[in-house]
Image (tube, rainbow, N blue to C red; front, side, top):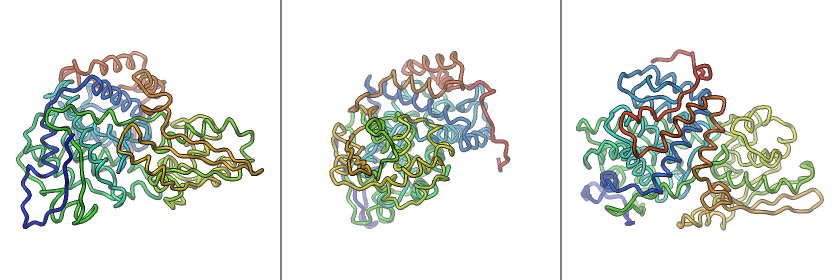
Length: 501
C-alpha cells in the first residue's frame, strides 16, 4: 500500500494531474489486477446479500415508487429490475435507481466504519446495471469493477470524515462507483479521472437526510448517487470534462465543504499491480438496523437472561463510541429517537429503541421489530425512556483503530435495578463480524437470502439465482442479464400514483 497526501493548493500553484487524488483513483481503476479467490468469494457473498435485502423490501413504499419511476424508462437493450422478469429491461441509470433503493431500504446490507460511515455494497447495483445495458462486460469484468469500487470507497472512508462537516456519506460513494464503471468498461485513465471529478462535484449533500425525522430519502440517497455516477461517466465518455482539481483546488470540496484551505489528509491505496483487497475489511449485518447497533443487539440478547422482570430496571447506560453516541444515541439530541410514532427509518437509528426491543424480545426481525404495534407497546416505551448513551474515550479509540482486526463498534452496558444491583457486560463486535463469535460465511449469506425471500420467490427461482451467482467469474455478458431475482407476479405490488414520467 502507498500513502498519498492531499492538501489544498491555491489556483496560482498548478497541481499536475499525476499528483491529484482523482487521477490516482483513475490509475487504480485502470490497473486490471487479478481478483484473488478471497475477494471473488466475498463479492459473490455481497451480491447474494444485496439480493436478499432487495427482495425483502420489494413491496415497501420507497421501493415501489423507485420501481414505478424506472418502469417509465423502458429500453430494448437495457438493465433489469429486482422483482421483474429478465425480459423486461430499462435504462441503466433508472435500473440503478430502483435496484439501489431496494438494496438500501431496510438498512440491512454491508457496512464499513472508519473516519466516516459507508455501505460499499451500494456500488453494486449501478455497476451491474451498466454491465447489463452495455453488454461489454462479463462476470470477470464485473468482479474487477466491484473490487475497484470497494477499494476507493473504503480508502476514502478511512481517510476523510464527512459526518464532522454534516455531509452525507454518498460523497464517498459516487466517485467509487464512477471509478468502478471505468474499470468495467475499460475506459481510458483520462475518461475515468474526469468522471470521478464530476461524480464528486455533484454528490455532496447534507446529513439532514439522516437527522431528525428520517424519511425515505435515506434509501434513495445511494440510488441517486449511482444514477449520478452513471451519468457522469456517460458525459465524460462523450468528451466532457469536470471541475478540477476537485479535491485539492482552491474552491474545492476540501476547501469549502470539509476541513478547509489548511486541510491535510492521508489516504492509502494499493501500488500498481497489487491486488484490491478492501472488500475483505467490510462486514454485513445479521440484524436489520444501523451497523453500530449490531453488537449491542447481540449483547441485549445475552443480558436479558439475567433479568427476571423488566419492570425492575431503574435505568440503562450504554458506554460507547463518539459516532454511536452522536448518530444513534442520546448525543444526537433528536427527540424523534424516543417517539413511538417515529418512522421505521428513525427507529433503526435509535439505539435506545433498538436495545429496549432486543432486551425484551431476545430476537430481531426486519419487519416485526419496527411495527407501530411493537413501537407503541407501553412497557417498551417505559424501558426505552430509561436508556441513555455516554461517549467513552476507550470505545471511540477502538472504533478508530487503524488495524481492521482490532476495530470494535460495540460498547459496555450497565443495567441498574431498582434494588441497587447492577448488571454489567460488554461486546466489541457483532457475532456476525469476521472477528465475532459466529462470523458470516457463504452458508450464512445463503441462509439470509432464503429467509428474506421466503414466500416471495419460488424455490426454483431461488436455486437458479444462487447457482448462477456462485459461478460469477465464468458468466458471459448475456448471462449477466439473468443475474436478477424474479418474484411470482402475484407477490409484486405497484405504486399506482402518477408522477411526471
